[in-house]
Amino acid sequence: MSIDWTWCFHVTDLPDSGARVHLRVRGRMAPRWFSWTYQALIVPADYVMALGMLRGIAKRAEAHAAPRPSDRIPYSLPPEVTV
Image (cartoon, rainbow, N blue to C red; front, side):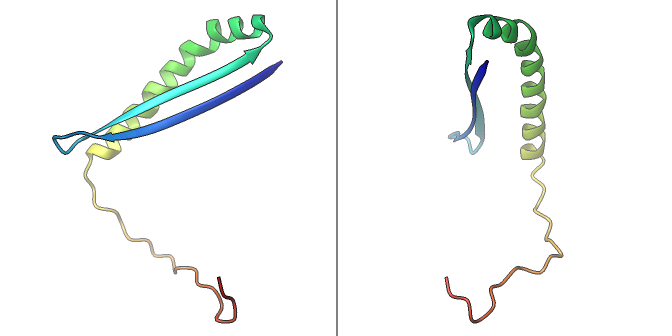
């Protein structure tokens, strides 16, 4: 059995200063019976998960909350190291 799977999230700016998130999922499976079983059992659950994930992204994006500063100290290279 083999699975080749990719997810792509793409954000498109809209003219009214908004944005649209596109989710693209591609997959290839072998053998054929495995693909049929996957489509019958997993695809409906994957749809529910993806819908919840995209709603969460929308909720956070629409909150317009200013980013909170971190209390972490930025990492810096020692003076003798050059990049």
